[in-house]
Amino acid sequence: MDIVEAEVIIIGGGIAGLIAAEYLSMSKNVIVITKSEIEHSNSYLAQGGISAVIDLNDKWQEHYMDTLQAGQFHNDPEMTEFLVKEGNKVIDSLSSWGVLFDRNCNGQFLLGKEGGHLRNRIVHAGGDQTGKKIMETLIGRVSGKVRVETGQYAVDLLAANGNCYGVYCKDDDGRITLYKSTHTILAGGGYAGIFSATSNAYGSDGSAVCMAYRAGAELADLEFVQFHPTLLKSEKISGLITEAVRGEGGVLVDSNGSPIMEEVHPLKDLAPRDIVSRRIFEKIHYQRTSVFLDIKGISNFKKKFPGVTALCENAGISLDAGFIPVTPGAHFTMGGIKTDLFGRTSLGGLYAVGECANTGVHGANRLASNSLLEGAVFAKQTAQYILSVKHERIPPFSFSFMQESYSAGSSSNDALLEITDIQEIMDKYAGICREEEGLKKAEYKLQLENFNPALLEQPIAAIKRLNMQTMAWLTVTSCLKRKESRGSHYRKDFPFALKEWEQKKIIRSVLRDESFTTKEATAGILN
Image (cartoon, rainbow, N blue to C red; front, top):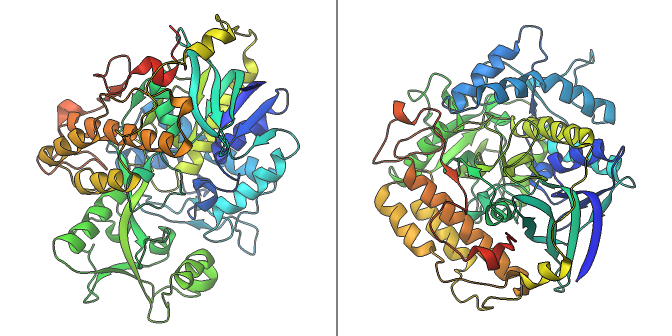
C-alpha cells in the first residue's frame, strides 16, 4: 500500500471541488482525487446556469422566497439566505477568473428565466453550455497549482474516535493508496445514478455519501430526489433538455399537441420540477400518451441551444418539425452528508461540498440553477474556514493498526445485486410516485444484513455495487420514514404535506441505524 500525505485531500473534481482547490492552493498542499478524467463530472454537463440577483429590479428576498417555495419550506432559512446573497459575488469571481458569461451588445448579462423563478436571474455561458465553460476555466486555473490524481476510486475514509484522517483509494489495476490528510473534503456528487433514467454522468453512485455513512457521519434528507421533467427520450435516454428551453417559450404538449400544464399550476411549464415531472409521469404511464417539448415558438433555436441541438442530432431526432420527445429522469439529490455553514460534517476533519452535501438550502426540491451556485458558495466557505484553522491534528493510532482493521471479513460479494437490478427496484418502487407496499418490497430486496467484506480486497466493480445498494437502501428506508408528501417526495398513500413534518429532518447514521452491514470491517472505524 502506498501512502501519500497532503494538508488537504479533495475527493471529486466538479465545480465545488475545484473552487475549493482554487482558494486553498494559495497556501495549502492540495490533492484532488477523481474516479476518471477531471472533465467527467455533472458540473461539466450542466446546461443550466447560475441563479444570481443582478437585475436592478430583482432583490435577494425574492430569490430567497422562490427558493423556499420550490423547497416546500423545508429549507434551512439562514443557510438559504446566505446562499442567495452570495450569487452576484460568485458571478463576479468566476468572471474575474475568465469565465465568459453571455452578455448583450451593451455588455450586460443576458438573464434567463427557469422553473420556479418569478424573475429573470439565470446567468449562462455559451448558451446551454454553462457548466462546460466554467469547468474549463477552473481546470485551467488549478492546473499546475494542485496535484490531480485521476482514475482513483475512493473506497473508504480513515476514521478514528470521531475524526477523519484521510481516505483509502483504489485504481483499476487494484493498487491501493492511502491519502493521509489534516482536512478531507468530500465533493463526490450525488446518487441519482441509482435510477436507470438519469441525467447524471456515469458514476453518480453515492460513493461519497456512503463513505461518510460507513465512517459514522450524519446524513439527512435522503428521501428527496429531484426528477428533471425533460430528459431526451430516444431509444436510450440520452441527455438533458435544459429548463431554459421552457424559459424561452418551449411548451410541453401531448401526442395531440395539447398543452399539458395549462390547468395544473399558475406558472404552467415553468412550475417547480416536482410538479412538472409528476404531470409528465401521469401522462406517460397513466394516460398512455407521449409528451413532447414544442419549440416552434423559439426563434434561432439552434443558435440559442447548441448543446440541445447536438444532443438531438446525435440521437437521430430531427428538430425540423419543432417537437422534442421528453420523459422525466432522476437529476439531483437534495439529501446527503449533513453540513454547517463551513462545510463541516459531524466528523472532525471531514467536510462535504456540492451535491453530496446536505446544506439545507434546497429543502424538499431544488430551485433551478441553484446547484452550481450552492457548489461555488459553500466551497469558498469551506476553503476559507480551513485556511483559518491554526492547529494540526495528529492521528492517535499506528499504521500497523490501520492495516489490521482491514484484515478481517469475508471476500464474497454474492449478496450484492447487479447495478441494473438496483436501478430497476428504484425505478419501480421509489421513483416519482411512492407508496408503503412498494417501498417495503424494495427494502427487503436491498437488504445486506449478512454482507461482511474486507472492502479493500474487493474489485472496484463490487465496491461500486455495494455503494449503490447501500445508497438505494438508505433512500428507500428514508422514504418509508417520511409519511407525507413534500416537494420531490410524493407518497400516493400520504398525498399531502403535513404540519407535523414541517422542518423535520430524517437523520441517518450508521451509529443509530439498524444493522445493514458490519460496520467495523466495512468502514475501518477504529474506535
